Image (cartoon, rainbow, N blue to C red; front, side, top):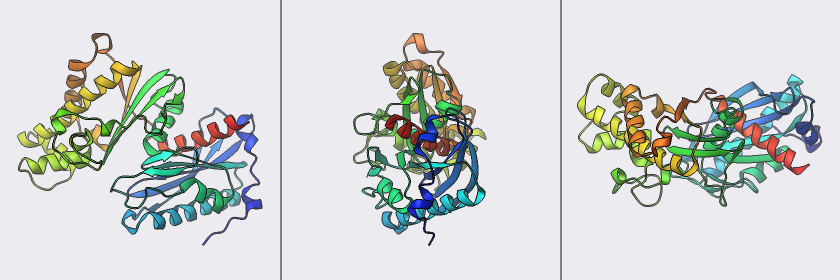
Length: 336
């Protein structure tokens, strides 16, 4: 076990984030499959950080939330030591992107789906602060991805933007005037939980049925394909078959794209974004999926927004790490 003394960890200066001096942030991204970490190095506040000293571990979510938390704390501790050994600029704290709904006031995991059993209720922020002795900021993983793309990626410069992340699950984020809309409970942007008529009767990782995630996300695509008589194959294979001309696969892929497009139209009617950023493996399903997405969107959105720009996320796996670091910077800046 790597131990980090409070004096060693707290060599960082929280005020560094607000000035022109270089500083660093340990960033973590906790997903259902792996936990990624890095040290994000800033030349100055407002600059795009350089992602360094990357490492990752398997989440092994089935071992339970307490086990995952212990290994997340160990990874963070290792990265603090790595940063000190590499002589990067002053460590100012730890930013964390995590699956689930996060109570941002203290970094508690307020809700997590069955993908991560026992993760709900874990005191993520408090545990990391106790282990490493550094300030900690925690936010939902899709929110982190969006914040990275907003500040330094596909949505940079946009005043109002919508992020949609469709992979194993389905999530979203709303960005207004350079900041994430968290909402009263930290749940703003939960597009996967919104209802869609095509999904009525279909179970998902959320309580109840009828949620958009059950027909749009990768897991939903796979289940829909099986329910219509197809084999138990991956969403990626279903996409390949659709693009190769298989009728059943095409039906399922078009349903995913069209349903998401219709739902994005409703969200666009509410917030009037300048850009919709698409991220996640489902969004790479190919032209059949994307054409269905645009058709569903244009058929339901207000005419004034029919030509709304859709953009692919550009930061890749670094986006949630950068977003987590930015959240820590925002927290420290607001405290000054």
